[in-house]
Image (cartoon, rainbow, N blue to C red):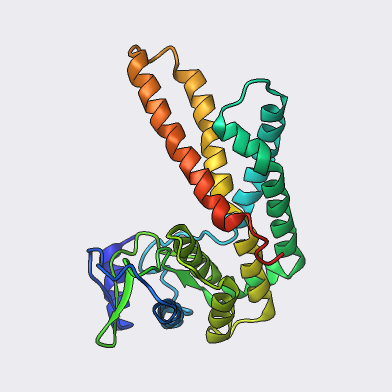
Amino acid sequence: MDELLINKYLNKKGIAIMGQGFSYDKNMQRNDIVSQVDLIIEFHKLLLGGNLTGLSKIKSTIGREVESYKVQIRKLQKNYSYVSSKTCTNEIENIILSNGKIMLEKANKAINYIYEHDYFGVIRRSMNREEICLGKVDKSNLRKNNEKIEVCTIKGMTYNLVEEDLYNYIKKLQRKEINIDEEELIKLFVHGSHLSFNSFDYLRGLCSYPKDFLKFWERYRDSRKDNTREIYNIQNEECKGSRKARNDEQLLNGLKKSLKYESKNFII
C-alpha cells in the first residue's frame, strides 16, 4: 500500500490521517456507541466506489473471514475428539470438554445460516460497489473532529464487505464487556447504510459465531503442537515451564471471558 498517495486521496474525501492513536472516554454510553456506528457508515459512504487500484495496492479480503471459520471448525472438531479420548486433562481441556461441542455446534449453525441467506449476494454487492473497510473502527482509530473525519492508521484498510467493520466493532465492545444490544446495532448499520436483508442476515450469522472462544481454543491446540516440536531446542526447562504457564493462564482467562458473551443464544 502506497500510504502517501492514499493519504492524499483520503484528504480530498475529507478524511485526515493523523498517525497517532486517539484517547477517549472508556465509559461509553449507548449514545456514544450509536454515534460511532453512524461515523462508520459515513466513512464507508465517502469511499464507496473509490477505485484505488491506480493509487495503491490495497488487498482484497472479501470472503476470507467465513472461509477461515470453516477451516477452524474442521481443525477443532478433530481436536475435540483428541481431547475427549485423553485420560488426563488440565483446566483448559476441562473447559473445552464442557463447552467445546456446544460451541462447535453454534459455529456450524452460524456458517450454515450465512450460506442459506444469500451470502454470495452480499459478496457480489461488495465487489460491484468496490467497498472499502478500515479494519479498526473503534474510537481509538476513528473519530470526528469539527466535521472532519480523522483516522489514526489505515494499515488495516482492505477491499471487503462493509459489514465486517461493524462486526469488528461489535466484537471489540463485547471484549470490553460493554453491555450492548447487538441486534439493535446491526439494524442501525444496515438501515443507515441502505443495505438489504441479506446484509442483516450476514451480520446476524457472524455475531452468532463464537469467534473468540474458538480463537483461544485454536491457540491452545497450536501451543501444544509447538511445545512438542520445541522441547529439544530449549535448554532452560525452568524458563520453558514459566513461559508455558503464563501462556496457559492467558488462554484460560480468554476462554472464560469469551464464554460470558459467546455462550448465550444470541440470534440463531
